[in-house]
Image (cartoon, rainbow, N blue to C red; front, side):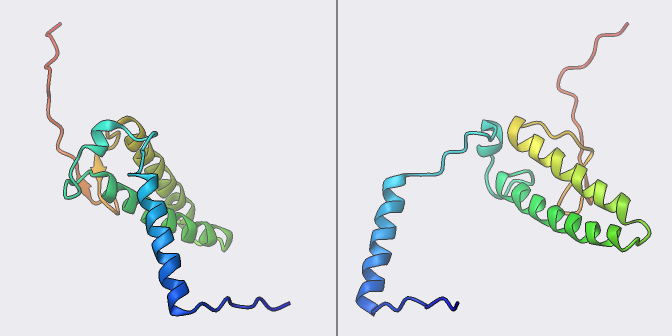
Amino acid sequence: MAVRKRKMTPEQREAAAERLRLAREKKGPAQYKNVAKSVIDLPDDHYLSYKSVKKWIKTQQEIAKVERRNMVKNIKGATAKYYAAQGYVRQMQHYIQHGDWPNDFYGEYEEKRIIWKTIAPQEEW
C-alpha cells in the first residue's frame, strides 16, 4: 500500500509555518533538567561545552555502531574499540549530568589531554 504525499498550497504552507512558529514561542526555551548547571553555563566555544560534548557523544555512538558490526564479522580489535567507545560515551554522559569530567582525555576522538589543576592541596601526613 503506497502512502500518498499530502499536497499543500503556498498559502497553506505559510499558515502551517506560522502555527509552528507560534507553538515554539509558546513552549519557551529548552529546559535541561538532567544537565548540570555548571555545564549549561559554559559558553558554546568552551572546549567542554554542552554543545560540543553532545557532538562527541554522537560521534562515539557512530563508532560503537560500526565496531559492533565488525565484532560480528570477527575483525581483530573491534571488541576493544567497541567497548572503548561505549565507555567514553558513558563518561561524557556522566559529565553532562554531574558536571565533573572523569577522564584524562577529551575531544571528539579522545585525542586531547586534560591538564589538571590542584585547587586545594592535601595536608602532609
